[in-house]
Length: 286
Image (tube, rainbow, N blue to C red):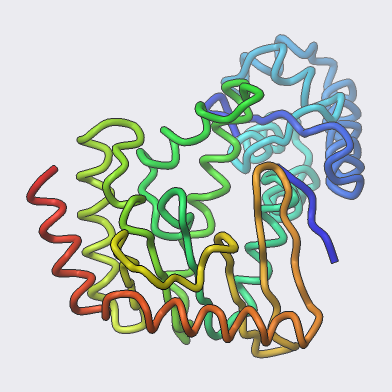
């Protein structure tokens, strides 16, 4: 099973062409409904935009299914157009379609998981990232992402952090390469804030964070980063990602091999207590 690669502060966001046909069709439906209600009241796109606090171009993009409206956009439009909740009713569905398909797939895996293990070798694992750190990463992508795409990706990653407020709380295990904790992506202040955030998360009872020291002569993680999900509803799965490609592995034998590999990685890393002490020392040096 393979998943594909992948909001604006202005209140809407671009939908990647061909990324997810279901999401694209939903946005087209929402756009048609918005247009019907607008024309029924006799308002132009510019007049509606002024009434709800958005530009004519933003209203036009939503009507054409090019942008996903935020909940506040739909609420305001529903009220101004007297739609009686018909437009606001789309909020939940549009919210799910707001983010890239890869992120929605990951969020689904995370939502169903009772235990997650993650090994990261080139940057801080997504669930551990601060918003500043995430915001520094996406402009580094090549080919370059436009500003709306960056905002969309940042918002999507931040939305996944709701997992830390879930109850019953899932067991979360992270192994970070030492180099990821030293590399000042976004600048030293961003890194310092990131290290402080990791130290805070490391105090949670359901979270264990470990550091893989650079000086290890034996290392089971040479195959690259990985994520493991133990679900309460189905079989365990693994998630692998490299460059712009990601893949969910459901084959039982393959998943068991990766679970064994992750177990060895954890055994080779510093213990959680040693790791937090190590990160505390790094913060003092930053």
